[in-house]
Each structure stands twice: as structure tokens, then as C-alpha cells.
Amino acid sequence: MKAHQTVNLKKSCLDFSRSIQRSLLELMQVKLETHEKTMSVKSIDESENLFFSVVFTGQVYGEFIIGLNQETALAIFNIKDKKFDQQKNDFIDALCEVINISSAQGLQELKVVYPELSIIPPRALLGQVYLPRYTFEKTTLFSHHGQLTCYVYIDCMKLEITEALEKAHADLKQLSQTVRTA
Amino acid sequence: MHSIIIVDDSRLFQKVMTQILSPYFQISGIGASGLDAIELYKVHQPELVLLDITMPYCSGKESLAEIMKIDPKANVVMVSALEDIQTVEECLALGAKAFIPKEQITYDMKNSAQLAEVLTAVIESHFKWDVA
Image (tube, rainbow over all chains, first blue to last red; front, side, top):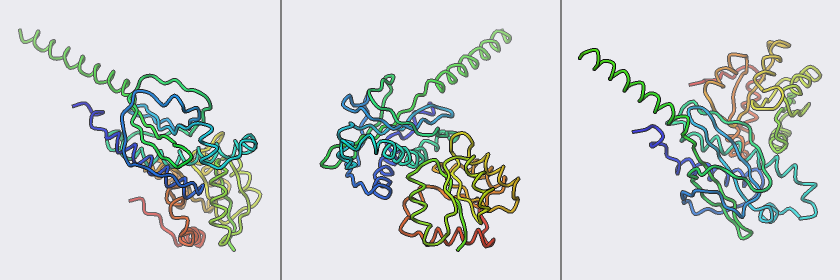
């Protein structure tokens, strides 16, 4: 069995979202609810245009992402539209810190299989983002103002190339041994 | 009151730490980068530095090394979101007195007296960090 097949991405996504929920409450006094369910999707929600992300690298590459719609963000975080420009930097700084803390929680489950993963400082993206068609695990946090989506994905390409090379190497070794025996 | 400086690139975390610790310590300075940490240390010579690890321009680890060169007896406590044992060990080897995960500070904020107690113990030199 390939190593990446044993990764519990659902648990990682839930741990990440629970930490987001708790950090938002503790640090920003924003209360969101959760259904405690995750689902696999092939793309991020097209209605979202504000993203916070933390990339992790090591044996595999991947990303923890918070996605939300800018108008929903104003409502959830109680920012008046006219004041958004003034408060934008503080808001982005705060959400970056929240995802920074929470991605470390989500990473713990992934580190069971890939112990050498580490995270890169968070970034904020405004507007549409286009990502390759990874399989994202997602869960939503919501209030009556709208929802915030927590995503996680793993890109196993590097790992698969390594596995393919290792297999080719083993096959060649076997073949060479067979030829020598003959 | 013991004097401390807080260095973290997140303004939110600076604010949180200031709120938690100002009843117990004299906050001599607040910085946002490793370079700030070094400058603030030179200017204020605080009894304790709370230092984030991941910061732009000059990381917490680099500034920790520089502060320990300036003052080998400096009390530096590292703070980070990522509880990575290798990073913790590297920081302790460089002279950090303790490591506190950000998650613990965030979630146990109501128990700020406990954090103040740990930091006071570091300053008063009877705190021993157990990596295991």
C-alpha cells in the first residue's frame, strides 16, 4: 500500500476546522457553528473570493485553506463596508494568525504518516484562485451571516514519482539478476 | 514587576500577549521581526524576551542566536504555532529557556496567571524545560 493512502485527510480537515472555530472564538470573539462533517470535492467554491492559506512541504506538498466570500466576511466579522479599507490590514493579519495556529493542528494528523512536514508562513489572496484539480477535503463553519470553508489537500506527485523510480530501480535490479543467473 | 519584550509579526498575537501579560509584567517593548528583537533587547535589556520563531527578514532562531551572543544569560522563551521537536531542540541548544505553543496560549488565555507563573519562573531561574 502506498503511504499516502493511509493519510486520514478527513481527520486532518476536522482538526483544522475545529481549531479555526476555537481560535476565532478565543482571539476574535467570533462564534461559528459546525456540522462536524467533511466531504471530498474537486475544486474550491466559486463564490469564494477571499482566501487564507498555509502551504506545507516535506515528503509531500499541500495546503490548508480558509475560503470565504468578501461580503460574507464583512458580515461575519462585523466590519462596516466603508471601514473595510481601514480595517483590512488588521483583519488580514488576524486571519493569517488564526490559520497559522490552526494549520499546525491539522498538520499533526498528517505528520503521523509524513513526519518531516513543515509549514510556510500564511498568505492572503483576494479574488479568484485557480488550483489544479486536487481532491480537497472540506468542511464548513457557519453563522446566520454565511459560511467559511476549511479545505485541505495533499499533492502526492513528488511521492508518486519517487515510488515509480524506486519500483523501476527494483525491477531493473531483478532483471539484471535474472539475466546473470541465466 | 519584571520587564519583558514581546516579538511577533502578528499584530493580533502582540495584542493578545499584551492583554494577557500586562497585569503581571512591565512590557518594555513590542516588535514584529527578529531584527526588532535584537534592537529592543539592546535598548531595554529586559528580563525576558517572548520570541516568535517564524518571522520575516530575520527569524526568531537567528535573533535568538544574536541575543545570546549579546548576553549569554538572556532569558528567551520561544513561541510558535508549529510544535516541531527538532525546532524546539535547536532553540534550546541555542540558549532558549522554554518553548510555548501558540495554541496553548490561545486556548488557555483565561488561565493567564499560569503563563505568567511559567515566565516568572524562567526569569527567577528555577524553570527547567523538559523536552520529553
